[in-house]
Length: 302
Ligand SMILES: Nc1ncnc2c1ncn2[C@@H]1O[C@H](COP(=O)(O)OP(=O)(O)OP(=O)(O)O)[C@@H](O)[C@H]1O
Image 1 (cartoon, rainbow, N blue to C red):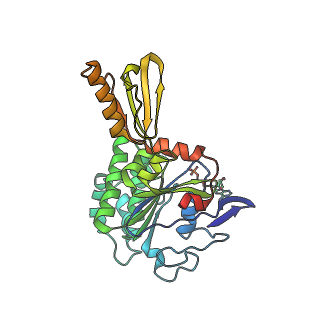
Image 2: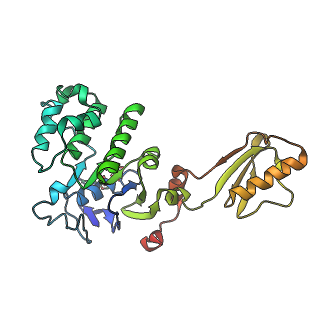
Image 3: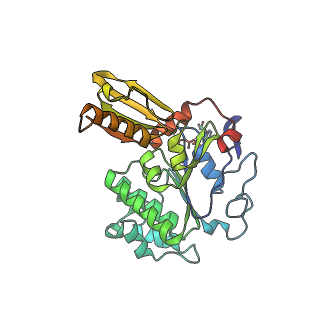
């Protein structure tokens, strides 16, 4: 996809493939082009170039039934302020041939108790749930969720995650999710792409994105004498920090840990002080990908 706004490029050849039934995350800094991509894929915005097939159709020439098969929860929604929750959801349900039962859906998204209240009187989190209910009431095969939990409290966020998981599990809905929350992406997504300056700089499973530019795990403990004199296995780097703390980064966490534990045994130390082993987080992988020099899409795909 290519798109420029008044000559200034927002998408410079964004290339994506989302598989049927998966939750695919679009990650990237502010202004990277995520919302522009969602608006184009959802059929709300014309692109300048590139080929696009969404559920087998070009969103600019969708044919009669395509729109009913695609649900969109935009970043800024909040329609129907004068209607009650149930009226709004029932109204939108009436536009679809096989809508979800309204009261069941309101229960699923946690709105049953405020079903009779006007949308304009709801809290921000409750309105966001209305947005989600409106996006899914037509039982779309494909759902675009643009930052679904921004502004929600921790409990509400988890409830929205549970709703999305229920939808994907029970109806096999394919979801394209944009989010700035790494926790959200780790919780919901199967695969994703990191977008920067209108291009995908990395594509893959969430574990692959978390590995980022270096797939090394981290082992931390206190006491440099626990480092075996013969060294550690694999592609490993040991760093001495303040207070005699040690940070080991390694591609072979089990082997490196075994070597440290063996050394502790030799020294008669039963418990390695402050021992912690961690895999790379999505946040660290994401940051390493963004810090990398601009890569071509071919490199990103491989
Ligand atoms: N309607 C518009 N008119 C002009 N420029 C726009 C318009 N919409 C977006 N842009 C520009 O296009 C670029 C991509 O914006 P977009 O909203 O797609 O990014 P995003 O990745 O969704 O960002 P965020 O994470 O902040 O939501 C930005 O430089 C933005 O300023």
